[in-house]
Length: 267
Image 1 (spheres, rainbow, N blue to C red):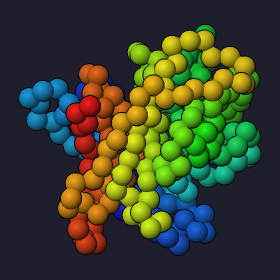
Image 2: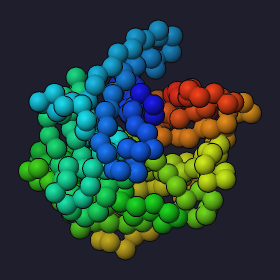
Image 3: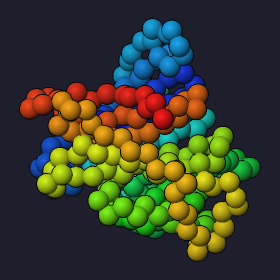
Image 4: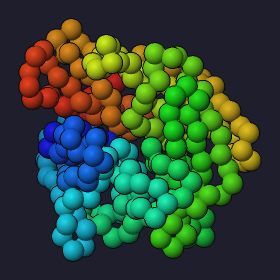
């Protein structure tokens, strides 16, 4: 795998999505393979843990599934992954178990999904918080599953990330316990190298309704690369035991191979 794309934490285990693609596949909007790496029992203090992985496949066994696996969330034994395969009739979200076999696919007609978070379950219906854009005013919507589609609930809002240099991002994380939304952003140097990252925190401890709400960040965290790291790009974020963990694409010096990893933030 050539790129770390997203992560989530379930109980004591870390699940990290990685993919294999190149510039040609991105430019031509080609689909590529995705692997879910599993880090079992790594998080409790003093645990040694073990690793495993699953290739994400269709029920028919196809491994060529996603144009850009960009975000992942979890609920009730299933992972829900953004594919960016297209809008309208294209499957934007894939659902699969820890074995990697896709059990459900969902389309969405309201724009290209960038990030996804499980939001709630009401009478067996699942609701998700999705973002559908970037920039300094990021649009979010609450959607729900209806058959093989994600459909709008009529609730939408924006979160404000006013730093122009940090206009691009890869993930968001909604903490169900504290009702806080965390949005990752990064700053490019010379349009190519990423060394500086920020995490914006928003307080959602209120009823979300309508389409006119706008949230300012209650806290902004700055995360910069080490001196020997020529690239440090946060791709995913999750919280465990009130501590933040991120996965990142990392390059050390002039290395041709990345040193991607999962990092604990002491903030």
